[in-house]
Length: 71
Image (tube, rainbow, N blue to C red; front, side, top):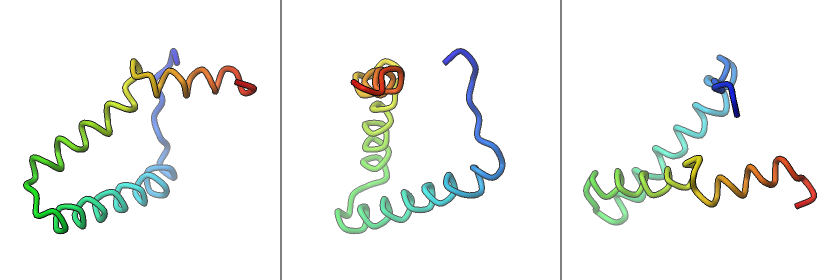
């Protein structure tokens, strides 16, 4: 992608806010269930984040599927 994508106000206040709240609620529940420190949750999020790195195999496959819908 040559230009940087940015969400519009409707996207920020709608699905992005909704998903952020969902993640926070779920991570709070996970932390309570496991009785784990904030550091564990932080590292867990880094692991999930790496899945969307432009260099990850997951990202490469998503890009390939977008460019080749029959793939």
